Amino acid sequence: MSVEAVAPADALVFSSRDPGVLHGALWMGARTFDTAEGAARGLAALADLDAFRASLAALLVTAMNDNIAEQPLEGRDGQPTRLGGDLAHAATVSELALVYGTSEAVAARTLNFSTALVATHPGVHEALASGDITEAHARVVVEQAATLPEEAAQAFGIEALTKLRSRRGLLRTPSEFRTIVRNLRERRHPESIVTRRARARADRGVWFRPEDDGMCSLTALLPAETGLAMYERIDALARAAQPPEDELRTLPQLRADALAQLALTATGRAAEGSEAEPTPEALAEPIAGMEELIGRIRAEIVVHIPVAVLLGASDDVAELEGYGVIDATTARQLAAAAPTWERLLTDVEGVPLSLGRTAYRPSAGLRRFIEYRDGTCIVPNCTCAAHRSEVDHTIEWQDGGTTDAKNLALLCRKHHALKSLALFHLRREAAADPERGDNAKVSGELVWETLLGRRYPAEAMNRSHILGPEPPKAAPPPLAPAPASGDPAPSSVIRNDPPPF
Image 1 (tube, rainbow, N blue to C red):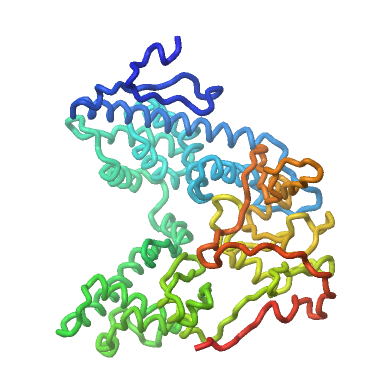
Image 2 (cartoon, rainbow, N blue to C red; image 1 turned 90 degrees about the horizontal axis):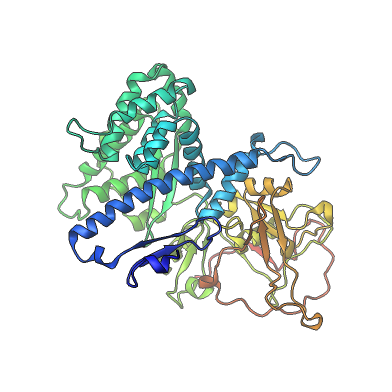
């Protein structure tokens, strides 16, 4: 019987776009929306469905990983060991990122959670499939058990399930559950906290995340005593600056400015005899505002500024490498504060920079061009920044590829390794030739083909909002001999020019 014969005409119906895998259909009658009680029942039913979906997704992710691990993944002969030898994990993460349309970091967390849930915590997986817990509760158990020895992790998960509900049977929130399970882990862990702390210190780091409207978030994972001492110092500096009547910044704003000032003006080495508490001189020093702090930036920051914006003839946007769009005023301030600056030009015809077969490694100027043109690793959903990516020959050098802009692209180290091993492939579709009657849809663009044979368009970062529409391509002139230094033509890269203002 078809779903049309069962579902009312006004029902909301879901059916998969791949009915060969997900069979049947799911529908909800319109009367469910008529009352608050009906809507509440509908939401509860969807919560059960979401829990089942999460349990099924974990099984599918684990099955993908297991099947990829069973394939021969030696790759191209003569290549050194890449990715620590764990090619199956690396390939599965990349496949997942493309299937889900998410970053590789999120895909890696999904893979680790799924395999641990299915293999190590079958009781937790069963509770999720039945709707007794949510995916958030399951993640709490898996994450807290991750640092336990394998022989203790499964028993810990079963005991954690007994803490899901309060004495009167109310399901605890994931946040409340996390606190209880964390305490349980501390009591059940067979290793001392000294040993665990030493291992956890290896995970310390600082992360940058772009936010809206020209802002960002910095997140740091630090030993507790170090982080607390840093916060107390920043707070003391901010509170010392707040009393003056002409200080209009709030305490949180002052803390943020104090942190920026300390980071941008620090010498990198603590003064001899320094203390955790700020000195009276430090407390007396005024905290600079954001505009003044721009002038103290000494790290290399790449800003892409249209000439009209740089000259003040336009207040259009510019782009801060690693972040995104910034306003024209901030861009000009960064340009003025830079001790040196570099601009990258191609000739007026837009002819790609080229070294042909005269050199395997791209010159500094050619690499700069590729970094600016691509912006990030060109594999879909990979956000690895240009300065952390590698310039790769699309057609391998050993296969006759040339060191030309049209045959070079940015790949992060992981995707470069997968391509070099010939497990994943980066190919250019054949350009259409109307005289041969070729299909006009054949684009000539790059395509990333995964281990499973799935094909995705590979493309550089879209900079049209900065550069404007791409100009029509002119026929390239005959290739001139490469300079002895290996650099492209002198007119292509101009270094250390003073700003034109």
